[in-house]
Image (cartoon, rainbow, N blue to C red; front, side, top):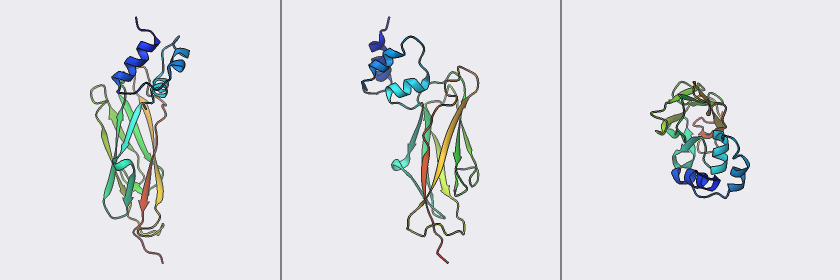
Length: 171
């Protein structure tokens, strides 16, 4: 039989996490099953992991792209759909300027990172200038689970702020 300390140490060891000193919080909720968000809060791990290349996402209109990766931190009980949704049409994440992209995670590929490629929409509108201060577009993320226990439904997922550099000249 595992006690609270054994469970916490086992969870952290399995996920490669340090002991974050949250034993008091874990003991406080020991009388019921923990929700995925609660486990993540106690361990410091996010249920959906987003890793930006080089730690940030930077794109320039008309010049290349940047990427980030998304993966789940826990085996889901059913298929999880993660939707990446740009805040405006300044960027394209593979479905057209401003359009959402859907990523599907199953019980077979849940721990395999899926790449989101970000490209700036090369418009003719001056929004800051070449090499100048970028404007920021945010990509929000949401998750829903089809069937299973629904542990990924409505969880909090970090957004990605994209720095978009303009290539247009002032008038």
